[in-house]
Length: 192
Image (cartoon, rainbow, N blue to C red):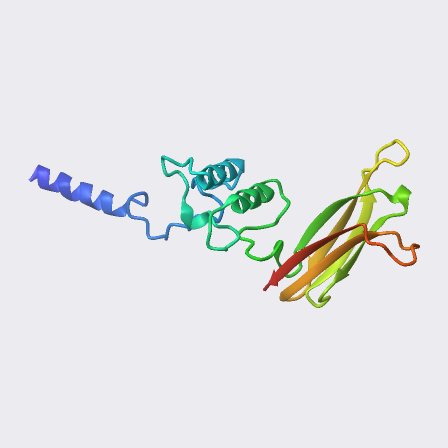
């Protein structure tokens, strides 16, 4: 009788254990967290790059979350995107065909090297100002020597759901005709 009571008590305790029989679903692994340690970090980028060149003999890469650009392949671009996410250059993963995926009222930053002493500067155009607007832009972190490069930082905000393209061109406004010395294009998706 004592054995039956202990067995019953054990089964009751076992059945009510939140560790063994949790009613909550297991959260999905975050895109880019290929080693499933609940962090997307440089280790994940390294593992994806090793996987890409065939150096994943122990199968450490969770391939279901490694394709962060959603192109159907796990390649070096995925490793680079994970690294960019880790250092804060992109706001979230996966990125798909976009450089930035943000929500409404979220901001993102683009920082480019510039040298205002030459007369050159970065100028932007936004394909759809109903989706993205410029919050601020500033030239900072100039070196102390004359002619030293600086950083031109643009802060953009998502204002409506949709897609937009930001074109940045590097030129001197006073040149006639204007000669573009550099250009960058960023694809942005704003979600609800």
